[in-house]
Length: 107
Image 1 (cartoon, one colour):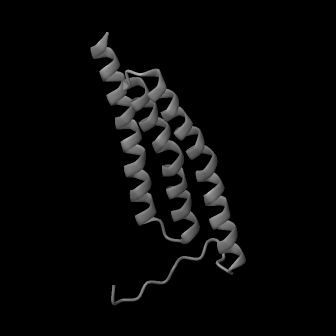
Image 2 (cartoon, rainbow, N blue to C red):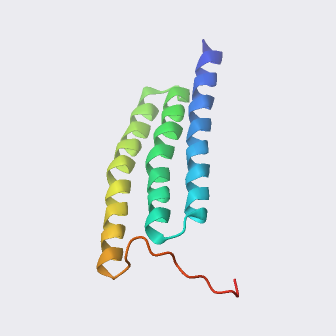
């Protein structure tokens, strides 16, 4: 039974790490601010769900699992709110969606 719990926890954390990696790669590869922010916000939402779920399965104490669940709920409330606020501020500052950032040849 312990081995099954370890396999499940490792699998959940590996899926979470995959989402974080792909989101980080997307934030580097996307052409403009809004698509980069979208990739980063998906990383902020999908990554912690799986990583913290794996940690909850792995924890031996119910108190630790409840604390991890509280952290997960807090992250799921604040991360999309922060992404929305960032997008709204960028739009109000005049950053139009769909315009790729011009990079200089010196980079």
